[in-house]
Length: 336
Image (cartoon, rainbow, N blue to C red):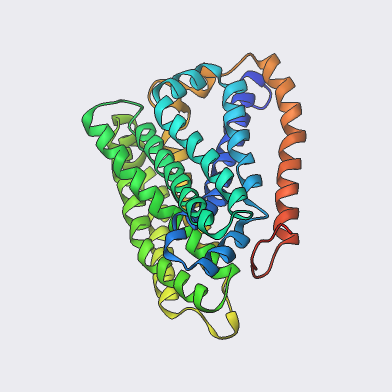
């Protein structure tokens, strides 16, 4: 734990924690609406309208967490911001194109005539897929220490596919909760089929991370750390088995426990994220730059921290309010 009597010690830790929390919230919240977009071609036109309705009140607010995380990286760790974006400029560009494409398609499809609506539906799917693949590719390169060799690029490509499948899984879990009838039954099937991608993705990253450096290997495999960390993979395995069993029996009579797959998927993603955070701390650029080496001056961080203490609760409060107001089953999203 940091020394809270020393601002130069606790402020970098506080900003790293805020940035990590923002990324985790983004992955879960924007993950499900990206997943809904990836699943789009598998639904009928009427079902697509309901799928859009399930994410309509939330999708743009979900992306606020990504903006917050990148903003915190820029102002708190400017050196790391430059190193990371320099190494990842191409996938970042592809991600931004995908986000713009899906945002435009989301709005235009609601007003387009039927023959144009099909085009915007395809672009919404394409934008969602581009964004998910780009984020997965960035994750893979980051885990590999931003090294760009054929081996690391190949691993990043696999991670890209696994993350896209993972997003489709959490998207299916969201649709199980927000829909009913035939679409809910389809969502249960999509969840069962995409769960394998989640297993492979978490397994690949978990196995590769300790091999990046001897430091990471010792953090995970040395004694007694291996005993302290054992609950992470054990609990993840139990949750995966529970999800598999539950999805085989759903939907339940009376729509009981429809929220449970999404809640369990959120816990599963959180456990995987905590494992990564433990692995790389205190590095913000793996094996190159720690949060203390990359941090801005304590005087600057203190001023920014005061602003963050105002901004973060406002964003969180708005998100909670939106999800509270628009709880319940989704209907077709209309603008007239």
